Length: 260
Ligand code: ADP
Ligand code: MG
Image 1 (spheres, helix red, strand yellow):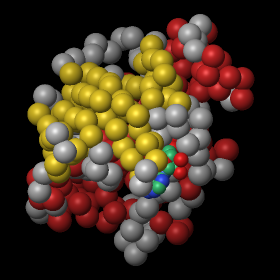
Image 2: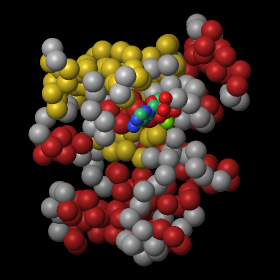
Image 3: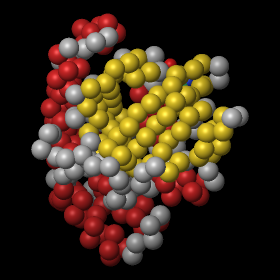
């Protein structure tokens, strides 16, 4: 990935915490992501990876801290009393700049592949159907599914459904894409086709934060690896450093349990 030059800072997180009840799940996250960077977030189950991504997309409200998108508070402001969220309308406007792909594809079951892709551009961005269709067809082509446009999700394999979900996220022209274990629910033989689409996106210069257990993908595609443990980013750095010379004992233990 070193061929792609990274750009200005896109996302900045400062001292982000998240409690569920009394449980402190994110214990002070600081991070910075530049345009065109691909960051892989790895770490044990329960370490807070999904919670972090959900905060980045305002699916969770932080308890304290700041999330800045291009230097502006993205979803609200940290105050002395905690976190004051922006009005829902403003949050939705910001959220449209960030695409998210989940482990479970969450397609609308009653809509065909192409209708899934054009729904948000029509409803949220107000595109005319004809324009949305033209863009949607291009996106389905990009994920290798031109011939599946009129199929319903139930008729598609998991890998195909996830590629539709990626096309659907891209249809909003996001500036940042978040992937939360996008291949974990797939049969092993379908993982590769989804990773290939993600790799292609990365090569095209999309800024991406990818929570993954696919260590080969992280090593090959990411510019940077963040290792999360118990609600903290314990260490981060270029893949060759984190994989070959992890500083932290917890990182070494993690690598002992997953295949690198
Ligand atoms: P990861 O994605 O790294 O596996 P998660 O962010 O899903 O970790 O979860 C981190 C911790 O937060 C876990 O202990 C989980 O049980 C807890 N948690 C996540 N979501 C909620 C919630 N909505 N309510 C209460 N606890 C939660
Ligand atoms: Mg998770």
